[in-house]
Amino acid sequence: MCGVVGYTGTKQAAPWLLDGLQTLEYRGYDSAGIQVVSPSGNLHGVKCAGRVAALRERAASANPVGTCGIGHTRWATHGAPTDKNAHPHLDGTGRIAVVHNGIIENFQELKRELMAAGHEFRSDTDTEVIPHLIQEAFNGPAKGDLALAVRNAADRLEGSWALGVICADCPGTLVVTRNGSPLVVATTEDGAYAASDVMPLASVTSHVVQLNDYDVATLTADGTIVIRDRDWRVVESPGSFDIDWDASAAKMGGYSDFMAKEISEQPEAIERLLAGRLGKHGIELDELKLTREELAAVDKIVIIACGTSYHVGLVAKAAIERWAKVPVEVEYASEFNYNEDYLVTDHTMCLVITQSGETADTLAAARRMRGMGCNVFAITNVLGSTAAREADGALYIQAGPEVAVASTKAYTAQMIASYLFALRLALANGNMTPEEVEKHYHDFEAVPDLMREVLSRRWQDKQAARRFRDKVSSLFLGRNVSATTAYEGALKLKEISYLHAEAYPSGEMKHGPISLIESGFPVVAVVPADHVHDKTVSNIQECLARGAVVVAVATDGDERVAKMCQEVLWIPPCPDQLLVPAVSVIHLQLLARYVARDRGYDVDKPRNLAKSVTVE
Ligand code: AGP
Image: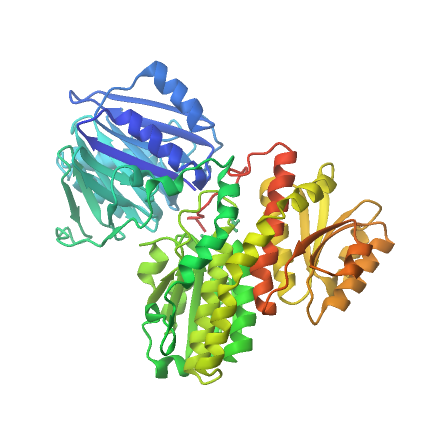
């Protein structure tokens, strides 16, 4: 979704703003812009539909001069992705510029009111009401105090926002505020910075300060940051954290795209996650912040997530129910939020799974669970993210920055993190002995090498990808936990190759989707050596009998599948069936990437998608 950057200091602002926007490209966007203010109070902006590269070209010829500025990548919600609708937006006097991430729900009534008072609008966006409201306050009750004017304007807004504001009358001052959309700030020797996430800041600092909802921060050129809360009291000790990865971790480092890099990083991510987790008394999971007794009392778990993280939830359910014998419901956050009849027990616990920790639907669902009296535990990749801060406890998967929009390493790391949680719960409620827990933990330790083995077989995926080159649709099948791998594989293919992919539990195929199959129709069947292997083999037969081309994901040595299927993506045997999804999915990630590249698409920045979906 939209990205926001801001800077005030001793350097020219435009170069860093453009670099910052480039690091935010991964969030997904369709237009971009910057605005700077010179020390003498001249505002100068450039914006355009399309990529940051196009913006750079325009900025190179326009040469905006100023040491204070704001920048934005826009993911269109209100109004098409055009030059006119790109941010920053100005007030009627052209002296106040605003960038905004989020949605202003009451913009229509505000716009009507402002137009009645003589304000003229130039865009179709919801955002444009904000600079006009700030102007009213700046020239009225706030009496030229930009921070106060921003706060007064924000008081009129409904919805979500992260705002960056500059004004020709206060050169060198950058004001930022947020409600529901992420925003962090940092101070350095050459000035103060703001951004909608830590990615742009990693190149200038390793320490960032978090803003809470309704905080208003005033950043000045000497690097000073003054934060005021909703009651306009100065926040003396704001929350802050260190970025625990090097800026180079967010660079491609020799790979042709971030997705390739992130797929390859999975073994190391799992190793980092597991390191030091086995203690004298079982799994060390202090992040849970629950006593053994409190954990033992948990009688129902609700997993809340979206997209790929939802698929993690489906596998986590299998692990928790098998090992800890606690019933689990997995809910799409967006659906859960509007199910008014949801039932919880006195000891229901909520597990929130979110790579970004900023997904609006997931945050809303987690808040609702807390409101229902449930303990909320978050599994997330982003340090200091809203999900982590609002939860009762949070486990960081430490997968490192995930830049490609299509989630890969976060998927497998979140899965193993949820397994650690399952073991901890099983030990607490007496469904596993310490010895059994230890045995499972050692099984987990085998995963990185199993992943490396699959990665070394990527030529199989490259070869199988050719089967999809000229296709318009495909079917993914699997049973039990492998059904989840099928869902995730289909999601990956859809996301980056724009090829329709439908995923079904294998046994459900004959109840409808089988009608899709005709000669040459591609089917991906996840059929590892497990207790449902033969059932899925029968479903593969049904596909083949109708002319399908079947690409199977199968366990080494499976002669039967090798003879039947046109392509086989081989996985090594895994010590536990529940570990198969973490290993087999790598083939489907690679397959999706090869298909997308064959079809000529940018695998890191698929159309219409955003890395972190911060609107409902
Ligand atoms: C994954 O490839 C997708 N980009 C998407 O489904 C994503 O998993 C979903 O939006 C949830 O994001 P989160 O994990 O950051 O909450």
